[in-house]
Image (cartoon, rainbow over all chains, first blue to last red; front, top):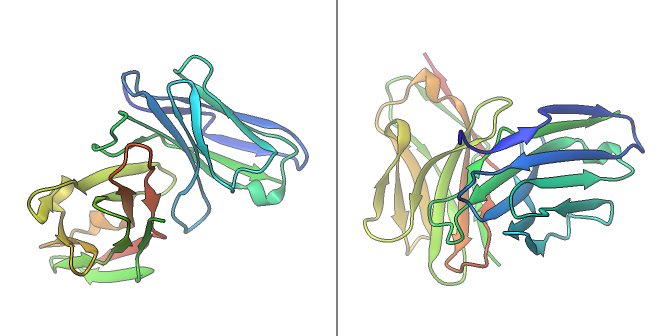
Length: 114
Length: 114
């Protein structure tokens, strides 16, 4: 296990299209987090899972956004009807439940909506 | 609600000089505090954390941070800066609750000149 893996690394899509990103966390970690980062800003929390249960969703996560973690392993983040304002880096992280060791982040998926 | 502030957008230091990147936080109860570094087009890399114990914590790449409870600060320091330290640095905080998540500051760009 070499860490948190995110695919694709880059995605360019036309406005109005749907996109889906995948995150594979560290296998021993039962918590998985999604963050969004725009240029020059800090990551903003979107949602997190403990195993397959989605425990919290940010108000930033509009109805067009949905995340799943069906078997408590990998997770997907889908954005429907993309808008230019969705252009950002989408970061996934994983941790043990206690989180005292902080999170391990993936390299992110950079979304560009044209 | 928890929050973290990084008052400086950019810090410029000459190579070999000491550096400090400032961070203040606000939480209910005891905090978990973290510093992460981000290089261009990369995810976040963990540098160090404060959970409990000694107020001075040491981390990766020669960095250290000092926890000051009375001033609610967690400043990042390094005795002698390297050009390779140039990057974006994020301070982050989490409340001492298993249900909480990490909240990030807006980031400070550290620029080390030769």
